[in-house]
Image: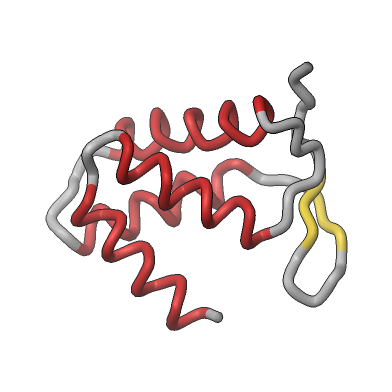
Length: 94
């Protein structure tokens, strides 16, 4: 059964409202760093991330679960260079 995501668990354990636009922005930022210019593609990929999390029954995923799913979707959808940029960005933030 699909669960709609309304909240996420941050690294420090706090629970905050879910904002898909942050996922879209992070994907676009990574894509842009390797020459990507189409924000619509970032939105489509972001939608796939949400669908994947919902299919896993994650009603309140952690930041790490979301980031892992972003990486998985980017690679599965053939955006390896964006995935690499995203992973490097993620490591800087951790």
